Amino acid sequence: MTVTAPAPAPAGAGPGRLYRVAGLDISLTGTGIATAGGTIRVPTKGRRNDSLAARRNRIKLIADVVVTKVGDVDLAAVEGPVSYSQPGGSTWDRAGLWWQVVDRLIGRGIPVAVVPPTCRAKYATGHGGARKAAVMEAAQRRYGAILGSDDEADAVILRAMGLHFLGQPLAEVPPGHGVALASCQWPDLLDDFKGETR
Image (cartoon, rainbow, N blue to C red; front, side):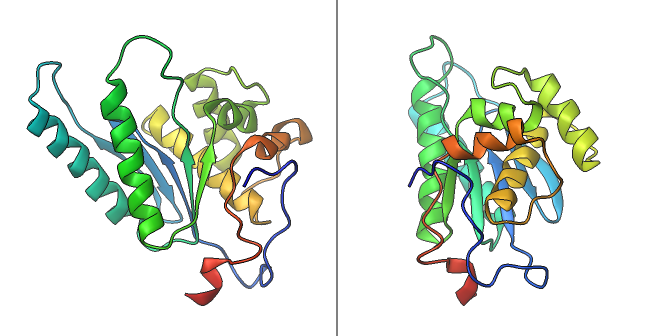
């Protein structure tokens, strides 16, 4: 569902119950993953003339690694697809990877939130059009994260947004940043919060 304001935390949330949230910046070249255990980047390489089988194997490998690294969480906050009206890039392969990861997460009973790239940038910096470097600087400053790539920085922000939605923000953010939560697609955790049964 799409919410118009940050939702209250599900019943049972509070200082004694820390939610497990993963942030995922899904990419063919370097998927960023942020969990309570830290951040990692899953890099892969491909070529424009790769066979269909090679492309399929690459997508499967990335999805396998990502879902394994995410583990058992209460919520996965995933960056939404970029605009495919823009030329360039491996449009079908990116879309296929995105759906592979999301399908596997949902198939395991993990609620998935979809965060538009502009909302991720706005939550981090206050500006929806902020560049990757600004998002990375904000993630390092606000959360004290030591990050090796902007993919990991994006994942940290996505995880922070998921925790904020659940009522347990990693750090205080200005109101102008927090409004970015309202334009994300959040799963309906209030009626059926999966984390409470684990």
